[in-house]
Image (cartoon, rainbow, N blue to C red; front, side, top):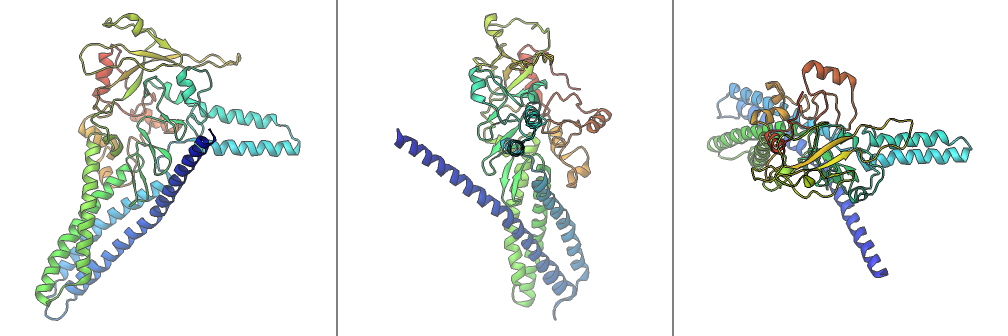
Length: 477
């Protein structure tokens, strides 16, 4: 037994060391790679603007005709492509530094808890009243439950809830106050076993950063951080402008390099370097721009695409109070009407067949407060449904998918000023569950979904899933 324990501890220490080493590598890459890219762009300015345009076209050497118009035109086009590319890149860096799209989790919750523990210890040493500190701690832990705190369920025992053991389940209100949310087969929201938090819809855990991220696409060392919902639009714009910029450099440098060799009998080393660099970065930027735009048109991400053909999404869909199915199921009512206060694994789901399948139910909240002064919270019952394998519940139409990420207006597609509508949709429901009254008023004026029914818009796959289950359609405001 001691040998087994020591082996387990050694393996745990080894995994922890590897994770820390990976974090360190990513941290240094995030600092070094952006500096390298800035240096490459600076080198291209010197090679194209100074060496090619000024020293060869505008003020050429002896025996070469003077062509100021061509030199000025190349300089203008060069900066017309470089400026928006640079703005998009710095927009990505700014987003990664200030608003990377992390799901508020255990780390932030632990910091708040430790602050309160230190305050309690200091109060005890000073002989002051501890009741106010304990009350502050209770308020803090309660904030985890209503979604206003820094962690979505950061102190929840997920395994105990799945086994049917009663206990507090902070953070669930963030989900069951909506009409539909992604869930596990037992009806509870998706759970991150590393961060120890409930995972909002479309969020994934980043092993590079050790955090859950909203609509994570990938970790990009060239940008020095995570590409997620908060900066995916800027990333697409950057890759597109970079591809056009590199293509322009490749064509110009290749053409005039051949001309220089013909007229002067030798090549320009800086211009030849630009040919190699622009060809390399053109391949990279074009590939990333093409793949990213493809994912935008199908409303997916790089992470989701890994299991795009086989993945099954499970959703908890609100059953309206007093609703009675118009069509009787083709299975015994006892299976259809099974309801659990602490959900058990789903036995049957919707498949590709056309017949109506049964659904299991889960009722929230899982437990009512024992405080008699507080009125019991109304219960909400959800059906646990599943999509066909390989279908995308978030795909709308290609145009709507594009606008969801890139924006409604053409200038939003070109300029890296606003966030994607799916991130900053203005309906008052922030990603951490907090609500802003001014945003709600703006939403009412703009006609957005002010009911906070959904975390993300769902498409025909979800509508068909709900219809086949015999449930009423979602009411989109």
